[in-house]
Each structure stands twice: as C-alpha cells, then as structure tokens.
Amino acid sequence: MIRPGPEQLSSAAVDDGTPIDFNELRSARMRKVQSVMSDLRIGLLLLGGEANIRYAVGGRRLWTAGERPWAPTCIISASGEVRLMSQYDTGVPPEVSQENLFCLTWNPANFGAQIAAAASGGIERIGLDGASMTMMDVLDVAVPGATLVDASGALLDARSSKLPAEVTLLELATQLAGEALLAASRTITPGITISELRGRLEAAIRSRSVCVPADSDRLALPVRSVSDLVSSGDAIVMRSALLHAGYEGAVTRTAVCGAPTPDHRAAERAWQQAWEALLPVFSPDLDGAGLHDALAAIPAVDLRKSTARAIGLGVERKIGGSLHPHDPLREGSVVMLELTTCHADAEVTAGCPVIVGPKGGVTMTTLHPAPIVVCGS
Image (spheres, rainbow, N blue to C red):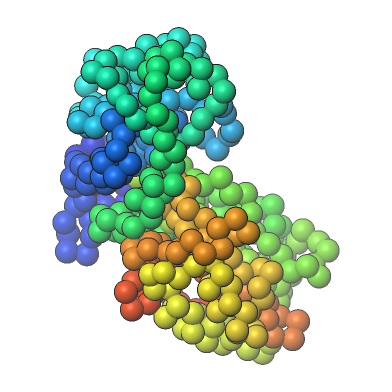
C-alpha cells in the first residue's frame, strides 16, 4: 500500500525511488499563489475555499463536500505570512507558526480581528476567493477603504498547470484507483447484486485511501437491466476515484460478466480508435467548444454520456459549459476524460486522466489500456 509521509518526504516514491518532498511542493505552490497576488497587486489574500487553502498552505483540515457560507479561514500576506483557522496544529505545516493559528469560530468579529491584525501596516487592495454579505460588512470595518479584488479565477488558472510533483501525486492516485477497480471487478460473478458489488468497490477504495471525492455514481448497469442481480453478459460501468495527499485519481472501465459479445468487442475497438484520435487534441489552448467539436466528429462516441473535467487538488476550472465555452486548457493541466462508444445495442464506457502537453495529451495510468475488463468467466 502506498501512503504519503505526513509532513516531510512522501513514502510514495516515483520510479527512480526518489520520494516526494512535500516541503518543496508547498513552497512551490506558495510561490505560485504569491505570483497571483503580485499580478493582481493585492497585499492580502483571504481564502475560504478548502481546495485553495490546501493548495496555498498545505494544511490538512476537515474537508467536506457540504455547502457552507464563505468565511476567510486563511489569511495570506504578500510576505507569505499565514493566519489559519485551526483548532489544533496536527496537519498544519511548520511554516505556519502556532501564534498565527486561531480557533474555530463563526463570530464575524473574530474574523475581523484577524484581518485587521494582518493588515495592520495598511492594505490598499485585498483579494478574495469568495464573498458573503456578512463578511463584506466585516471587511468594511476591518479594512476601511480597501479595494476588494476577485482572485478566484486567477487562483484556478495558477492551479491548473501542474507542477512535476503534482503530476506524480496524480499518477499515484490514479494507480491506486485502478488497483481498487480491478480488485472489486475480480469479485464479479453471475448472481452478485449491484449493492454487494458497490460495497466491495467502496471497500477496495477505502482500503487505499481514507478520502474520496464527493461522487456516488460508482456503478451503472445497462438500461435494459431490470434486476439488481448481475447476469452473465451484463456490462457494468465501474468508476473508481480517491484522493492521495489531496490529489484526485480516477479510472473508469466497463466490466463484462462472462465473455464479451461481438458487439461489445466492436464497441471496444471503436473506443480505442476514438481515444487515439482525441489524444492529439489535448494541447494548450483547447477549449470546451473545440473539445465538443472533436467529440462530435467521431460518430461512435455518445456525446450525451462522454465527459471531460479538469482534476487536481480539489475543484478545478470547468472545461467549457455555457458560461465559459472558450476558456482554454493550459499546458500541464490534467483532464479526466471518459468516453462512451456504441455498436448495435452494446456500449463501452471507460476513461482515465490525460495530461495536456505541447504535442497533445498523454494518458496517465499504468492500468491496461483496454476499456473492457472481463470477469466472472
């Protein structure tokens, strides 16, 4: 089992045996955050999004998927000094002094006091990654006259191009996700229930990571199936995703119980051809509209069921969509690409992360590239 060390060097080694230096990774990420602050000419950065806080500071706090009002639980000055809301120092990097930790609170006055202390030298421009009416009132009192700047987009841009160590962590996470998927797929036999299989997949994922993305769509049976029981010939879409040191790894494969039919094999060949045709498209400046056009140009691809989303440390910038159809990808971005191809009444769905490179995309997985996993035979 591969697990990272808590503070210094990760025991998750790359191929040459060199561990990941989390101290250097945190420093490199903070330098990118400070570059954002310099570009936006802000003297103070207020963060409430846990992904941004984890990226900038590296503190491992409670990270849940639930919605909550925005509050500046992390305050970063232009010099790199950090004030962090944390009840304890476990998981807090040594760069954050204990004197700059403040207790859990929802009292606006307490946030105001921390902001005022951080801005004691006078701050003209303050960056935020969110906002709320209450906190706007707090800022009016704590830093009167300061100009507020939306830094959320710039932070997403900075996070989108992955550092080499981040790519390694994403590769390790994807490897673990693939291992979990294969472990669960080996238990598929005729008569197993989807509920039982879902539990086995969840157990395989949790044995490799205590943290998982907020995604419950683990398994999908063919639409024509009316029973919870898996039968010989059923094709089950399996999605495995987990977090490794905060970075998301994800793998999708179609597990066929028994021997795949000729139609399944034809859909599999179509998937492989579509994948190879799409990889060259994943170069810098590709946007959502361009990716949609590339997918639409392949007749075997089901556009309704094929997806692409940026992954990394927490929520990343969306690819395309009606609001931002022409926002480009950047070199070093990582995209979870999932394709569904059809032949007759057979469907094959599979996918894994793709690294955006100068000459096209590179598949990020050591899992066998075949989109079909044969089991229960």
